[in-house]
Structures are given as structure tokens and as C-alpha cells.
Length: 112
Length: 115
Image (tube, rainbow over all chains, first blue to last red):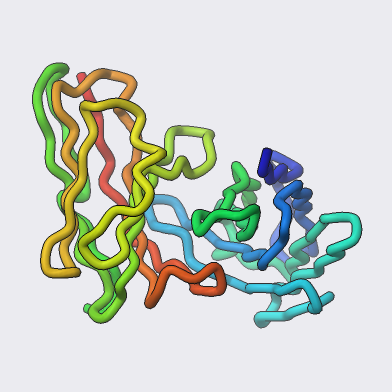
């Protein structure tokens, strides 16, 4: 069964600090992995997309890593800002379906 | 605007009533997806359109749920005889095509509350 597990479920950090969110998946065969950011009351917005051959991809202060062998990904946020407060969702495509598999997300709160 | 739009943004209805949710995808996007997001849960796939056809309806939770898409553009999701467990945020997304490499662009969602 295609599954995406994210940890931690929630995280509270102080403004300016770094943090790392984790994603483990069982989707096979693997096509790509995306990280989405979902602000409260909004739809998810894509941050990064990674394919099998990519290990690291950055988008500003966001850096995603992928280990396709261990089926793990992480999203590292550097020098957090209050606007980073959101839910971060890991989404994996593949598994013989056009429909991607969504994780439940990590809720991040950045305090001043 | 150029993004995916959904209406209404909020809907409160009584148990047993029918509701219609609307999605306007990004112009030119051939693929359209409906998802449901309950509090604290991940996105639950409902149905997917390629053009006006729905190759995958596997996520519709019951026969009270139906969806259509006309002119390869606007889509409506209809829930008949609503139940309290239907309360959730209904998200629509569109993508240029239906390939796995395509990024889905999401609308802001419709928040449905069934009393």
C-alpha cells in the first residue's frame, strides 16, 4: 500500500531558528516527491519537486533532500520567519497511479 | 485572477440538504482534481477529470457524491442529503496535464459545515 508518513506532527520554534521536517514513504515505483506549504485557510502551494536522481533542491530558505534508497526526504527551513507558520505536506507520486499520495503534514508554528 | 478559484468559500447547511461546490481551474489546464481535507487529516482524493471525462472516481465516499466538468473547464461537486461527517474543506486542484510530473495548483477550498 502506498503510504507517506511525516514527522513531527507539530513543531514550535522561535523566529530565526532552523528546523527540519521528515517524510518517509513506501510509494513504489517512485516518480517524484513534492513538498507543499499550506497556510491557514489557503490551498497548498508547491515548494519543491524532486525526482529519483536529485538529492538536494533549494528554494530560498527551504532546502529539500531525498534519499531514494531509504525512501526518506527532509525539508530544512533556515532562519525561520513568522510567515513560515503553516502546514508542510509531503506528496509522493508513483505507485502505479496518476493520483499522488499525501502525507498528513507537519504543523509548524514560529513564535516571535 | 490566474489561479484556481472555488466558490463558495464557506457553506453552512442543514443535515439532509444538497450542496453544490464550484471550481474554476487555471485556463488551459486539462486535468482537475477534487480532494477533501478533514481537521487534522491529510488530503483525501475524491475524483479526477481529464478534460470532461472522469477516469478515476475511486475516491468518492458514497453515491451521495457526484461531480461533473463541462467544456473542459468549470467543475461542480455535488453532495446530496448531506451528513455531519461530510463537514470538511473541499479542495480543487488543476494541472496542465495529468502526468505524474505535473504540479497541481490548488484553490483556496470550500469550508463545508453540516449542522
